[in-house]
Length: 186
Image (cartoon, rainbow, N blue to C red; front, side, top):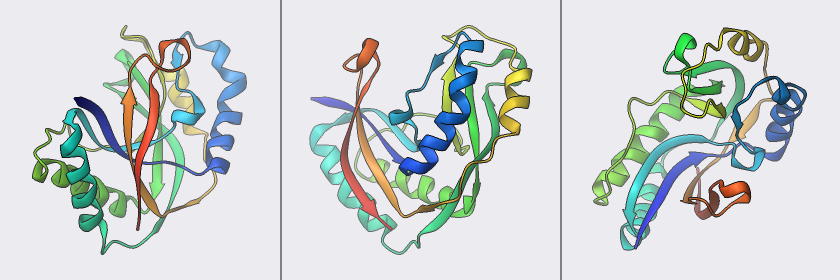
């Protein structure tokens, strides 16, 4: 059996609530697929087809790879758009604080996957937390970028990395259902 798995940093409840409260009155103004607050996370490594037994090896390798890293502090702030503001498909908040630590976590998360025989999807790591998707159609997002550029959430402790399975179509309204498989404390 293969799983869709990702390693991520999950913000604490107060940071999630703060961002959700900021977005809530604005959601009606954009015909987007909004990310549910319980799905807010910063992806370090995404593996679209991981064998179940490989995931166990991945968790062990990841724990070993992160063993010497300290905890840090992060804050969700600003805007990020993929691929660009005039043809946006993904709207996200940026991440500030100990971004060097976040970069090291991403590299080690990806390397642990490769060492476990799991192919890592995606491109260069760019720290962000996805808040909405345009549904596949390119959309001009300048006004949304300006809005998110005003956002700065509370600072929070980056103290763990989660390994999460994503079960497509099993959540409300056929969204993914997330299942935390492991939490690795820094």
